[in-house]
Image: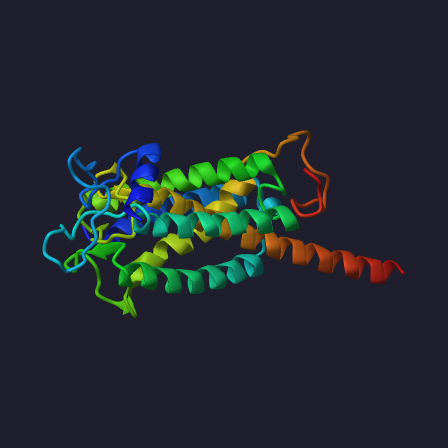
Length: 161
Length: 116
């Protein structure tokens, strides 16, 4: 397993330790807390660190499928969708940054994140999270609009029949 | 500044956008029922994932700056983002011109029954 990880890391770049700093040249790419006392326990494993981001991307992918299948958001009006999502995400990011600057919330200590930070205490995953929040909101609104439209069309057909 | 005050402050531009959309593009806004349904769905989702995120340690809060009212682990202030999204995003959607922004839509046309 370590050989595989080293190869992958050679291809994808260095792993980050839990402080978001690239691990040094002489550090092994993977350290497991095996309890033997010879390994450090706080350094990030690349695979575990992708769990949160992976879950977000998976959810976004599923949302894209639903959007495409039912014409909810981007497949309803690409221009509105792009601008709404962009402005919405930026707005929530600014909100987040103020919350971080005021010391209200902060990253927890966890292996499940990549450790990549866009700003102090603002993980990369947060952008994906906010995208999912905005996208889900728009998709549900779009779904309700479609159901309402189908209902109206059905009623119109029945009235004119 | 507490989380509550921060959220109240950020609701000002959100409500301003909503008011602007209501004045300028009322017909393109979703019905109150639609927003209500979306709000319920998103609140449930927020309650679930927020608790999961806090439980697994993705995010943490300064206890001095939050009200301390929590839905399990999730501070109640966190739901402001969800409510904010349900108000802000449809307002933006209504205000942003469509791909084919031609003359004003005919009477009775809505964003749901006109092709864009």
